[in-house]
Amino acid sequence: MKQDTDKNRLSQDRAPVLEALQRYKSMRVVPFDVPGHKRGRGNRELTDFLGEKCLTVDVNSMKPLDNLCHPVSVIKDAEALAAEAFGAEHAFFMVNGTTSAVQSMVLSVCKRGDKIIMPRNVHRSAINALILSGAIPVYVNPGMNRELGISLGMSLDDVARAIAENPDAKAVLVNNPTYYGICSDLKAITDMAHAHGMRVLVDEAHGTHFYFGAHLPLTAMAAGADMAAVSMHKSGGSLTQSSLLLISNGMSEGYVRQIINLTQTTSGSYLLISSLDISRRNLALRGQDIFQKVSNMAEYARAEINRIGGYYAFSKELVNGDTVFDFDVTKLSVHTRDIGLAGIEVYDLLRDEYDIQIEFGDIGNILAYISIGDRRLDLERLVSALSEIKRRYMKDKAGMLSQEYIRPQVEMAPQTAFYSESESVPLDGSIGRICSEFVMCYPPGIPILAPGEKVTPQVLEYIHYAKEKGCFLTGTQDSQVNRLQVIREG
Image (tube, rainbow, N blue to C red; front, side, top):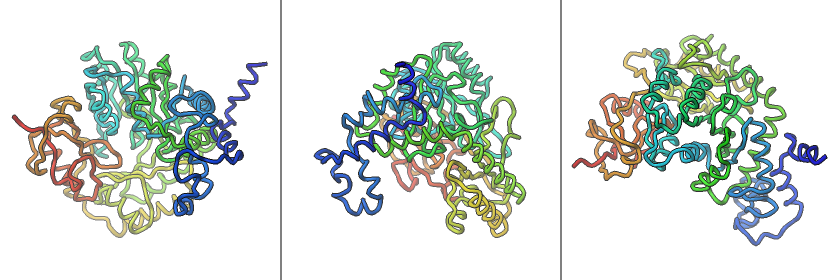
């Protein structure tokens, strides 16, 4: 009888945090705690902008609502439901974004001096984790598609070589899927790493929907990975900055929680926490239908864009069994270079001329993120705008850069470089020097240069080209990216 009660209490149609907040609101408690706006009464402008319903649940941790740093009741139950829904042994609610989840993965398995095998086309958060932990990266250069100019997944041969040459590595980190929708052979990489006693960490920021959609690529948990960072706010419908960290294979829940608490806020937002709880319930109950519709919409838009000509909305035809083991069909990735426009130029035109905001544009491609809240009518508007942009702005593509990924020349560990004495030099005077900061286009947030890497003429050409085309460059102390911090010589 007790088992039946527990099963009912933790049914996927429950939302423990939401229910606790609703109970709390009904109690009409007088607040002599933080936050200081006191359920919105103290900041009328903010209440008028965000709404009273929002402000009344922007509350502090307290016994009836549990505590994110050490959950023992409703948050604990909500995390247990998330773990069940995602097929993990445990799920942690993250309110510092997937950046914090990625950093927690690396910090959980690597200490100063430990090696970790990873692709170089990782999000900056993974390299930030190396700066924090002092771990040493063993970079596996991703495959390349020369036609599209994009980086792909990790080759099994390259991973096997990295493992054989670095048998003392503690873990392998895999980017799956990439921003463009490219998936590596996650199961084979996981099995290979485990056979050599290494943990497998998966940056699954763009793969939330894999856990709920039919006929989508394999999930990290199904592949047997040890940890996965999942951006619920990207394709799962929760609020921006809310995420999940999943663990399995006997990873210590208590130890990982301690690692998370090194960097995650002690004032977890109940707006973010409840959005994770509500979104998990929605996906657990309706996810398969939701993501079938998302897949259908993306396939429709892909076919319509390819019918325009000049653009190439790519999909599963790229699958080659290795560096493109699978493809996420919900990703509407479109190559634009054949109409003579960089992706960032199309991105800007869509926003400035057509009031359409897409996810990102780089030097050769755009990405329209299709997910839980999109409508077919909006996709028709996007297709129409792309057709008109081709008609109005198409030009000769001569002289355009074609490659997104430049193989780095790594000279020292990221932590060593970041904390070394440095000096500011003009961008054009930095060739041959070792960079001590990041340079990246954001999004997607994959570094062009990371601390410890040599500045080469090819890297400098890419930076200048990206600036000229209008990419939003970040990571440098100089906000204009006219100067670069490099390690002081001598």
